[in-house]
Image (cartoon, rainbow, N blue to C red; front, side, top):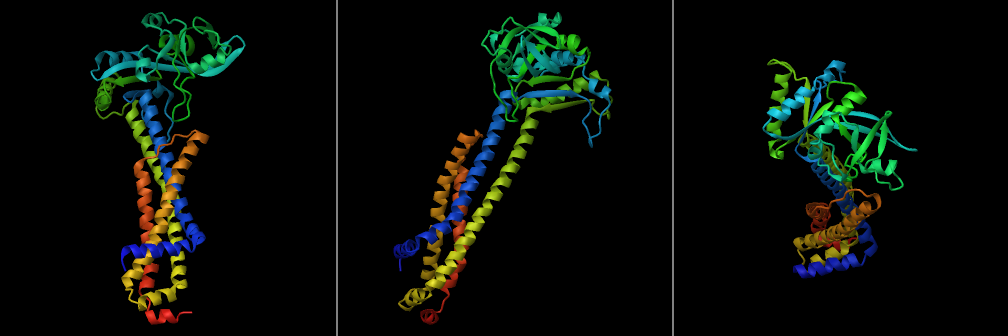
Length: 406
Protein backbone atom coordinates (compact mmCIF):
# COMPACT_ATOMS: atom_id res chain seq x y z
CA UNK A 1 0.00 0.00 0.00
CA UNK A 2 1.71 3.21 -1.17
CA UNK A 3 1.67 6.60 0.48
CA UNK A 4 -0.87 8.07 -1.95
CA UNK A 5 -3.45 5.41 -1.11
CA UNK A 6 -2.83 5.85 2.62
CA UNK A 7 -3.34 9.61 2.25
CA UNK A 8 -6.61 9.10 0.32
CA UNK A 9 -7.91 6.62 2.91
CA UNK A 10 -7.05 9.00 5.76
CA UNK A 11 -8.67 11.93 3.96
CA UNK A 12 -11.83 9.88 3.32
CA UNK A 13 -11.98 8.85 6.98
CA UNK A 14 -11.79 12.48 8.12
CA UNK A 15 -14.37 13.55 5.51
CA UNK A 16 -16.81 10.98 6.87
CA UNK A 17 -16.64 12.66 10.30
CA UNK A 18 -16.28 16.34 9.44
CA UNK A 19 -17.73 17.76 12.65
CA UNK A 20 -15.69 15.48 14.87
CA UNK A 21 -12.53 16.31 12.94
CA UNK A 22 -13.22 20.06 13.25
CA UNK A 23 -13.89 19.86 16.98
CA UNK A 24 -10.64 17.94 17.35
CA UNK A 25 -8.83 20.67 15.42
CA UNK A 26 -10.37 23.36 17.60
CA UNK A 27 -7.93 22.81 20.45
CA UNK A 28 -4.99 23.11 18.04
CA UNK A 29 -6.51 26.18 16.36
CA UNK A 30 -7.02 27.97 19.69
CA UNK A 31 -3.57 26.95 20.93
CA UNK A 32 -1.67 28.15 17.84
CA UNK A 33 -3.70 31.37 17.60
CA UNK A 34 -3.13 32.09 21.30
CA UNK A 35 0.62 31.48 21.11
CA UNK A 36 1.04 33.72 18.03
CA UNK A 37 -1.10 36.50 19.56
CA UNK A 38 0.66 36.41 22.94
CA UNK A 39 4.11 36.41 21.32
CA UNK A 40 3.04 39.27 19.03
CA UNK A 41 1.94 41.33 22.03
CA UNK A 42 5.15 40.56 23.93
CA UNK A 43 7.46 41.26 20.99
CA UNK A 44 5.49 44.39 20.12
CA UNK A 45 5.92 45.72 23.66
CA UNK A 46 9.64 44.93 23.56
CA UNK A 47 10.09 46.68 20.21
CA UNK A 48 8.10 49.68 21.45
CA UNK A 49 10.29 49.95 24.56
CA UNK A 50 13.45 49.79 22.46
CA UNK A 51 12.10 52.50 20.14
CA UNK A 52 11.11 54.74 23.03
CA UNK A 53 14.48 54.35 24.73
CA UNK A 54 16.21 55.10 21.44
CA UNK A 55 14.11 58.25 21.06
CA UNK A 56 15.02 59.31 24.60
CA UNK A 57 18.71 58.86 23.77
CA UNK A 58 20.19 55.38 23.84
CA UNK A 59 23.54 56.79 25.02
CA UNK A 60 22.07 58.91 27.81
CA UNK A 61 23.61 58.64 31.28
CA UNK A 62 21.82 59.86 34.41
CA UNK A 63 23.63 60.81 37.62
CA UNK A 64 21.71 61.03 40.90
CA UNK A 65 22.84 62.09 44.38
CA UNK A 66 23.02 59.68 47.30
CA UNK A 67 24.34 56.16 47.70
CA UNK A 68 22.37 53.26 46.28
CA UNK A 69 19.54 52.20 48.58
CA UNK A 70 19.92 48.81 50.18
CA UNK A 71 17.11 46.97 51.93
CA UNK A 72 14.75 49.94 51.48
CA UNK A 73 16.61 51.98 54.15
CA UNK A 74 15.77 55.66 53.88
CA UNK A 75 18.76 57.91 53.37
CA UNK A 76 19.68 60.99 55.33
CA UNK A 77 18.42 64.17 53.57
CA UNK A 78 21.98 65.50 53.34
CA UNK A 79 22.91 62.46 51.22
CA UNK A 80 20.54 63.74 48.53
CA UNK A 81 22.48 67.03 48.27
CA UNK A 82 25.83 65.66 47.15
CA UNK A 83 25.70 66.88 43.54
CA UNK A 84 26.89 70.48 43.12
CA UNK A 85 27.42 72.87 40.24
CA UNK A 86 31.16 72.18 40.56
CA UNK A 87 30.44 68.53 39.68
CA UNK A 88 28.56 69.63 36.58
CA UNK A 89 31.43 71.93 35.57
CA UNK A 90 34.02 69.21 36.15
CA UNK A 91 32.14 66.68 34.02
CA UNK A 92 31.62 69.27 31.30
CA UNK A 93 35.29 70.32 31.20
CA UNK A 94 37.25 67.15 32.04
CA UNK A 95 35.53 64.23 30.31
CA UNK A 96 36.67 62.68 27.02
CA UNK A 97 33.76 60.30 26.39
CA UNK A 98 30.88 62.72 27.05
CA UNK A 99 29.42 64.79 24.22
CA UNK A 100 26.85 66.81 26.19
CA UNK A 101 26.03 67.47 29.84
CA UNK A 102 23.20 69.28 31.58
CA UNK A 103 22.29 69.81 35.24
CA UNK A 104 18.71 69.17 36.26
CA UNK A 105 16.54 70.57 39.03
CA UNK A 106 12.77 70.34 38.98
CA UNK A 107 9.68 71.56 40.77
CA UNK A 108 6.04 70.56 40.34
CA UNK A 109 3.10 72.93 40.44
CA UNK A 110 0.35 74.69 38.49
CA UNK A 111 1.05 76.59 35.31
CA UNK A 112 -1.46 79.39 34.82
CA UNK A 113 -2.38 81.54 31.84
CA UNK A 114 -5.54 83.63 32.06
CA UNK A 115 -8.37 81.34 33.17
CA UNK A 116 -6.52 78.17 32.17
CA UNK A 117 -4.22 76.10 34.33
CA UNK A 118 -2.40 72.79 34.07
CA UNK A 119 -0.32 70.78 36.60
CA UNK A 120 3.15 69.89 35.37
CA UNK A 121 6.84 69.90 36.30
CA UNK A 122 9.31 72.65 35.51
CA UNK A 123 12.77 71.31 34.73
CA UNK A 124 15.77 73.57 35.19
CA UNK A 125 18.33 72.55 32.56
CA UNK A 126 20.98 73.87 30.19
CA UNK A 127 20.55 74.15 26.38
CA UNK A 128 22.48 70.87 25.93
CA UNK A 129 19.52 69.06 27.50
CA UNK A 130 17.84 69.14 24.09
CA UNK A 131 20.71 67.16 22.55
CA UNK A 132 20.78 64.64 25.39
CA UNK A 133 17.03 63.96 25.32
CA UNK A 134 16.75 64.35 21.54
CA UNK A 135 14.24 67.19 21.80
CA UNK A 136 13.65 69.73 19.03
CA UNK A 137 12.35 73.29 19.32
CA UNK A 138 9.62 73.55 16.67
CA UNK A 139 8.59 77.18 17.20
CA UNK A 140 10.63 80.01 18.66
CA UNK A 141 14.06 79.26 20.11
CA UNK A 142 15.84 77.68 23.05
CA UNK A 143 17.08 79.92 25.85
CA UNK A 144 20.85 80.46 25.73
CA UNK A 145 23.84 80.78 28.08
CA UNK A 146 23.14 84.47 28.69
CA UNK A 147 19.73 83.53 30.10
CA UNK A 148 21.44 81.06 32.42
CA UNK A 149 23.96 83.65 33.63
CA UNK A 150 21.20 86.20 34.32
CA UNK A 151 18.75 83.59 35.75
CA UNK A 152 16.20 84.85 33.23
CA UNK A 153 12.52 84.02 33.73
CA UNK A 154 12.06 82.39 30.34
CA UNK A 155 10.90 78.88 29.40
CA UNK A 156 10.33 76.43 26.57
CA UNK A 157 7.12 74.38 26.74
CA UNK A 158 5.79 71.13 25.27
CA UNK A 159 2.69 70.60 23.12
CA UNK A 160 0.54 69.35 26.00
CA UNK A 161 1.16 72.59 27.89
CA UNK A 162 0.29 74.59 24.78
CA UNK A 163 -2.97 72.65 24.23
CA UNK A 164 -4.11 73.16 27.82
CA UNK A 165 -3.04 76.76 28.42
CA UNK A 166 -3.83 78.04 24.91
CA UNK A 167 -6.89 76.00 23.85
CA UNK A 168 -8.09 78.64 21.39
CA UNK A 169 -5.05 78.36 19.17
CA UNK A 170 -3.19 81.50 20.31
CA UNK A 171 0.51 81.72 19.50
CA UNK A 172 2.27 81.01 22.82
CA UNK A 173 5.59 82.58 21.81
CA UNK A 174 6.15 85.75 23.85
CA UNK A 175 3.22 85.05 26.21
CA UNK A 176 3.77 85.13 29.96
CA UNK A 177 2.62 82.20 32.08
CA UNK A 178 2.82 81.92 35.87
CA UNK A 179 4.33 79.15 37.94
CA UNK A 180 4.07 79.46 41.72
CA UNK A 181 3.21 83.15 41.23
CA UNK A 182 6.43 83.69 39.26
CA UNK A 183 6.01 84.94 35.66
CA UNK A 184 7.84 83.14 32.86
CA UNK A 185 8.00 84.32 29.26
CA UNK A 186 7.64 81.57 26.65
CA UNK A 187 10.47 81.68 24.11
CA UNK A 188 9.97 78.32 22.39
CA UNK A 189 7.69 75.32 21.82
CA UNK A 190 9.03 71.77 21.60
CA UNK A 191 8.13 69.35 18.82
CA UNK A 192 5.59 66.73 19.97
CA UNK A 193 6.91 63.29 21.01
CA UNK A 194 3.72 61.67 22.38
CA UNK A 195 3.59 59.04 25.12
CA UNK A 196 6.49 56.75 25.91
CA UNK A 197 6.31 52.99 26.59
CA UNK A 198 5.67 53.63 30.30
CA UNK A 199 2.57 55.69 29.51
CA UNK A 200 4.20 59.04 30.37
CA UNK A 201 3.30 62.12 28.37
CA UNK A 202 6.61 63.40 26.97
CA UNK A 203 4.96 66.66 25.88
CA UNK A 204 3.85 67.73 29.38
CA UNK A 205 7.21 69.41 29.89
CA UNK A 206 8.45 72.90 30.70
CA UNK A 207 12.16 73.73 30.45
CA UNK A 208 13.80 76.76 32.06
CA UNK A 209 17.38 77.82 32.86
CA UNK A 210 18.65 75.74 35.78
CA UNK A 211 19.90 78.86 37.57
CA UNK A 212 16.40 80.32 37.47
CA UNK A 213 14.81 77.24 39.03
CA UNK A 214 17.56 76.91 41.66
CA UNK A 215 17.46 80.57 42.76
CA UNK A 216 13.92 81.80 42.14
CA UNK A 217 11.83 78.64 42.78
CA UNK A 218 13.69 76.10 44.91
CA UNK A 219 16.27 78.36 46.62
CA UNK A 220 18.88 75.57 46.67
CA UNK A 221 22.56 75.29 45.79
CA UNK A 222 22.64 71.58 44.93
CA UNK A 223 21.48 69.64 41.87
CA UNK A 224 18.83 66.94 41.83
CA UNK A 225 20.52 65.13 38.93
CA UNK A 226 22.91 65.53 36.02
CA UNK A 227 22.14 64.26 32.53
CA UNK A 228 24.96 63.42 30.16
CA UNK A 229 25.31 61.84 26.75
CA UNK A 230 28.17 59.52 25.77
CA UNK A 231 29.91 60.12 22.44
CA UNK A 232 28.45 56.86 21.16
CA UNK A 233 26.33 54.09 22.64
CA UNK A 234 29.39 51.78 22.62
CA UNK A 235 31.32 54.26 24.76
CA UNK A 236 28.70 54.38 27.52
CA UNK A 237 30.68 52.17 29.92
CA UNK A 238 33.88 54.21 29.42
CA UNK A 239 31.91 57.42 30.02
CA UNK A 240 30.40 56.01 33.23
CA UNK A 241 33.84 55.01 34.56
CA UNK A 242 35.23 58.45 33.70
CA UNK A 243 32.33 60.29 35.37
CA UNK A 244 32.64 58.09 38.46
CA UNK A 245 36.36 58.92 38.79
CA UNK A 246 35.69 62.66 38.44
CA UNK A 247 32.90 62.66 41.04
CA UNK A 248 34.87 60.55 43.54
CA UNK A 249 37.79 62.97 43.18
CA UNK A 250 35.51 66.01 43.56
CA UNK A 251 33.83 64.53 46.64
CA UNK A 252 37.19 63.53 48.16
CA UNK A 253 36.17 59.89 48.55
CA UNK A 254 38.98 57.60 49.64
CA UNK A 255 39.57 54.12 48.27
CA UNK A 256 37.09 51.77 49.90
CA UNK A 257 34.48 54.51 50.52
CA UNK A 258 31.07 53.97 48.99
CA UNK A 259 29.97 56.31 46.21
CA UNK A 260 27.68 59.13 47.35
CA UNK A 261 26.07 59.21 43.91
CA UNK A 262 24.26 56.86 41.55
CA UNK A 263 24.93 56.49 37.83
CA UNK A 264 22.31 54.92 35.56
CA UNK A 265 22.39 54.47 31.81
CA UNK A 266 19.73 53.85 29.18
CA UNK A 267 21.44 50.55 28.37
CA UNK A 268 20.85 49.39 31.93
CA UNK A 269 17.20 50.48 31.76
CA UNK A 270 16.79 48.84 28.36
CA UNK A 271 18.31 45.58 29.60
CA UNK A 272 16.05 45.52 32.65
CA UNK A 273 12.88 46.29 30.68
CA UNK A 274 13.76 43.78 27.95
CA UNK A 275 14.39 41.10 30.57
CA UNK A 276 11.02 41.79 32.19
CA UNK A 277 9.25 41.83 28.82
CA UNK A 278 10.90 38.56 27.74
CA UNK A 279 9.86 36.91 31.00
CA UNK A 280 6.26 38.08 30.61
CA UNK A 281 6.21 37.01 26.95
CA UNK A 282 7.47 33.54 27.89
CA UNK A 283 4.87 33.29 30.64
CA UNK A 284 2.06 34.30 28.26
CA UNK A 285 3.31 31.88 25.60
CA UNK A 286 3.47 29.03 28.14
CA UNK A 287 -0.10 29.73 29.28
CA UNK A 288 -1.26 29.82 25.66
CA UNK A 289 0.77 26.67 24.96
CA UNK A 290 -1.41 24.76 27.42
CA UNK A 291 -4.13 24.96 24.77
CA UNK A 292 -1.83 23.06 22.40
CA UNK A 293 -1.41 20.30 24.97
CA UNK A 294 -5.17 20.16 25.47
CA UNK A 295 -5.59 20.01 21.69
CA UNK A 296 -3.08 17.16 21.52
CA UNK A 297 -4.97 15.23 24.18
CA UNK A 298 -8.11 15.80 22.10
CA UNK A 299 -6.37 14.28 19.08
CA UNK A 300 -5.32 11.25 21.12
CA UNK A 301 -8.85 10.80 22.46
CA UNK A 302 -10.47 11.00 19.04
CA UNK A 303 -7.90 8.66 17.50
CA UNK A 304 -8.64 6.12 20.24
CA UNK A 305 -12.34 6.39 19.41
CA UNK A 306 -11.56 6.07 15.71
CA UNK A 307 -9.47 2.93 16.28
CA UNK A 308 -12.25 1.38 18.35
CA UNK A 309 -14.93 2.20 15.78
CA UNK A 310 -12.88 0.86 12.87
CA UNK A 311 -11.53 -2.31 14.50
CA UNK A 312 -13.33 -4.59 12.00
CA UNK A 313 -12.07 -2.42 9.11
CA UNK A 314 -8.51 -2.75 10.42
CA UNK A 315 -8.93 -6.54 10.67
CA UNK A 316 -10.22 -6.78 7.09
CA UNK A 317 -7.32 -4.73 5.73
CA UNK A 318 -4.81 -6.86 7.58
CA UNK A 319 -6.47 -10.04 6.31
CA UNK A 320 -6.03 -8.90 2.68
CA UNK A 321 -2.36 -8.10 3.09
CA UNK A 322 -2.03 -4.77 4.88
CA UNK A 323 0.92 -4.81 7.27
CA UNK A 324 1.14 -3.24 10.72
CA UNK A 325 3.32 -0.44 9.35
CA UNK A 326 0.55 0.46 6.85
CA UNK A 327 -2.09 0.66 9.59
CA UNK A 328 0.29 2.68 11.76
CA UNK A 329 0.97 5.10 8.89
CA UNK A 330 -2.75 5.45 8.09
CA UNK A 331 -3.77 6.58 11.57
CA UNK A 332 -0.62 8.66 12.03
CA UNK A 333 -1.38 10.50 8.78
CA UNK A 334 -4.90 11.23 10.06
CA UNK A 335 -3.49 12.70 13.30
CA UNK A 336 -0.92 14.78 11.42
CA UNK A 337 -3.54 16.05 8.95
CA UNK A 338 -5.74 17.16 11.84
CA UNK A 339 -2.88 18.98 13.57
CA UNK A 340 -1.47 20.59 10.39
CA UNK A 341 -4.87 21.79 9.20
CA UNK A 342 -5.64 23.09 12.66
CA UNK A 343 -2.21 24.76 12.74
CA UNK A 344 -2.75 26.55 9.43
CA UNK A 345 -6.17 27.80 10.51
CA UNK A 346 -4.68 28.78 13.89
CA UNK A 347 -1.96 30.82 12.17
CA UNK A 348 -4.59 32.77 10.22
CA UNK A 349 -6.64 33.36 13.38
CA UNK A 350 -3.51 34.32 15.36
CA UNK A 351 -2.32 36.90 12.84
CA UNK A 352 -5.89 38.19 12.48
CA UNK A 353 -6.31 38.45 16.27
CA UNK A 354 -3.04 40.39 16.50
CA UNK A 355 -4.26 42.88 13.91
CA UNK A 356 -7.58 43.26 15.75
CA UNK A 357 -5.81 43.84 19.09
CA UNK A 358 -3.67 46.55 17.51
CA UNK A 359 -6.65 48.21 15.82
CA UNK A 360 -9.03 48.14 18.81
CA UNK A 361 -6.72 48.45 21.84
CA UNK A 362 -3.94 50.34 20.06
CA UNK A 363 -1.33 48.04 21.60
CA UNK A 364 2.06 47.68 19.90
CA UNK A 365 2.01 44.40 17.95
CA UNK A 366 4.86 42.69 16.13
CA UNK A 367 4.33 39.25 14.57
CA UNK A 368 7.73 37.69 14.05
CA UNK A 369 8.10 34.98 11.37
CA UNK A 370 9.87 32.67 13.83
CA UNK A 371 6.81 32.69 16.14
CA UNK A 372 4.58 31.51 13.26
CA UNK A 373 7.06 28.82 12.21
CA UNK A 374 7.57 27.72 15.83
CA UNK A 375 3.82 27.42 16.42
CA UNK A 376 3.36 25.39 13.24
CA UNK A 377 6.26 23.04 14.07
CA UNK A 378 5.00 22.56 17.63
CA UNK A 379 1.46 21.71 16.49
CA UNK A 380 2.86 19.21 13.94
CA UNK A 381 4.99 17.56 16.62
CA UNK A 382 1.93 17.54 18.88
CA UNK A 383 -0.04 15.65 16.21
CA UNK A 384 2.72 13.06 15.79
CA UNK A 385 3.28 12.68 19.55
CA UNK A 386 -0.36 12.28 20.56
CA UNK A 387 -1.34 10.33 17.43
CA UNK A 388 1.46 7.77 17.73
CA UNK A 389 0.09 5.70 20.59
CA UNK A 390 -3.44 5.16 19.17
CA UNK A 391 -1.89 4.42 15.75
CA UNK A 392 0.50 1.94 17.35
CA UNK A 393 -2.40 0.27 19.13
CA UNK A 394 -4.23 -0.09 15.81
CA UNK A 395 -1.13 -1.57 14.15
CA UNK A 396 -0.75 -4.17 16.91
CA UNK A 397 -4.32 -5.54 16.64
CA UNK A 398 -4.68 -9.23 15.91
CA UNK A 399 -6.45 -9.54 12.48
CA UNK A 400 -8.68 -12.45 13.55
CA UNK A 401 -9.71 -10.79 16.82
CA UNK A 402 -10.30 -7.52 14.98
CA UNK A 403 -12.64 -9.15 12.43
CA UNK A 404 -14.61 -10.80 15.24
CA UNK A 405 -14.88 -7.46 17.14
CA UNK A 406 -18.48 -6.32 17.68
